[in-house]
Length: 288
Image 1 (tube, one colour):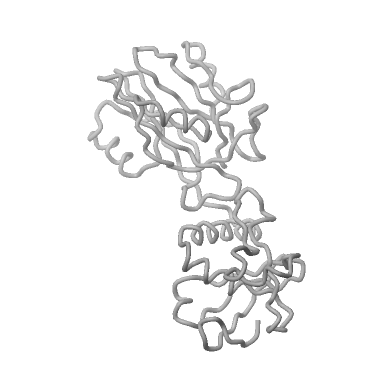
Image 2 (cartoon, rainbow, N blue to C red):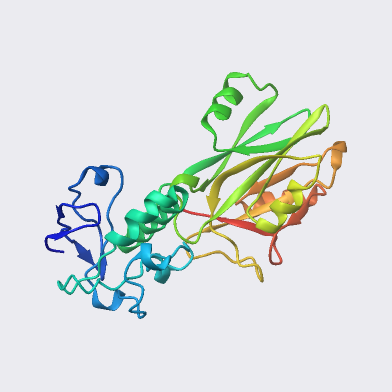
């Protein structure tokens, strides 16, 4: 980017490494840069078409747009201020004020950019296994990715549960790729002595269950790729996850989540009801 005097005073230099028109990273020189990365770009077609949007602090808007579902919105340019004639787009004046003013927005933006660059370089996002358990006396199924729960289910702290040998992959919430959606989890003891958990990737369904006093919201626990609402189809290489409901058998609700079509048919034969999208009841999609 060349030497210039930034808004904090003192010279700084941003050394660009471009790929597919997007800058990967810049060198950090001043102390505050130890706290945050500087994202910039040298591609001419990344400029914001509005020449008034030179700096975030002046306009309250800028070229970095949120939206992990839109790769074209992950990184957008802002025009280089007129005083700097190196001919390159600079995001220094955009990102530093954003970091100071809104750390939450900053973190989300950097996560979006990281996810996008992972796609650019063909880096497969990490996955974690959802492990399934069965409680014989309850005839309930339970799935979890949480290491502490898996340990306690294995050592008998949580009694009555055993592994079914079934699992499927999901994305950790902290490193989920663009286009994935969070899955919210609920817990209920309203049907004692039995308890039950419920998972949904649908924001509307999550909101409805949150309003039900019988269920305690436990947060977003992992991410998945969404199924197409119209037909339940999944992206290429992803596996359909079927959700089945026990229809209140045993006086307590329970759901089973499986990628196995044969298990789906077995549960339906036992009176369980498919829930989800499309004719097969696909609730979400599991990465390979």
